[in-house]
Image (cartoon, rainbow, N blue to C red):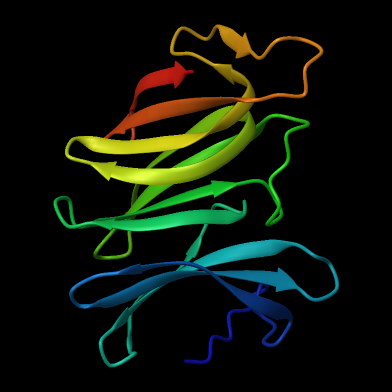
Length: 177
């Protein structure tokens, strides 16, 4: 399948399209395509859902501009859950960046979005019976009360964290380990 997904709506062929995370469903597959403008470097993300024949079921331009990390499909809620962080493929530990997790329903509508600032990485997003679990490593993260939790000053180490989101994207629990 050839994806020509421009950054600017008036110009075709102005961007390089890079395939991102893929999720399989019973009816086909979904993929996040990241289009990066060839000269300016700005990027946009497209969510594409194809049926078994490779025909578009959904093709939408996402408002989220960060780098796509994970995509999963929840059969229970009939929604796709996408996670984004940073501007490039390589995640960085120097400054805080938002981990943005959002859901798109089977009609192509974004139904919720949640951003969590963390200085660190996101390493996995897991579907649970009652929501989603985001896992990663941190140097600095805020708990549910807004209190900042940091690793020991002067060390180059990081610690794992878990963030539980409810089915509608609400932050249920933040656990720095």
